[in-house]
Image 1 (cartoon, rainbow, N blue to C red):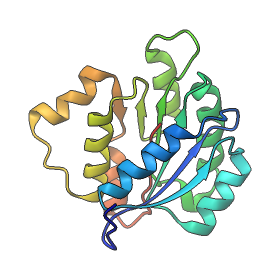
Image 2: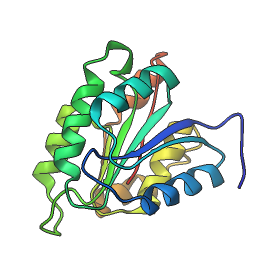
Image 3: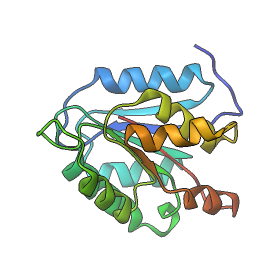
Image 4: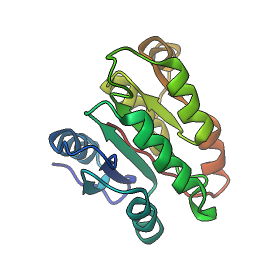
Amino acid sequence: MVHSQHGLHVLVCGGASDAHTWNLVCLQLLLEEAGHRVTNLGPCVPEELLARECLTRVPDAVVIGSVNGHGYQDGLRAVRRLRREPSLTAVPVALGGKLGVAGVRDAAAADALRAAGCTAVFDDGDLDAFRAWVDDLAGHGARTPATADRGARTGATTDRGARTRAAAGAPTGGSRA
């Protein structure tokens, strides 16, 4: 594992109803290997605990993972709770994994999550799009038309305004499932 003092501090967790662990460990390792510091809260993280940990630890990004198919419901509650805290309104929040139990991409659910405050939604588990998002947050994003377009083709959707808010001095943050 590579650790860097110059990387992002990313808080990783599972949704309140999601007891899966290995996806969070894989995310942690992926982020650490890219030089980021990770706080892994583990599975089944209630919204209040997530907000309290974000207020205490002040992450650069929050990543919420879903394996059980309740990512939409868990993610919606979590991001709404985070956005109620004035100091967390600009922290990048990513949600990834299974948004629903139907096993198909749900554009309406992804749109609702973004409208509630998710910066990025990876409803198909595309690691390339997630890596590009994290690199962009870290300021390493050499985004070419191909990498910028990859997210649209794979279902990853982001709020590009979060980068502007971060540049304006607001805290940043994100997560992935």
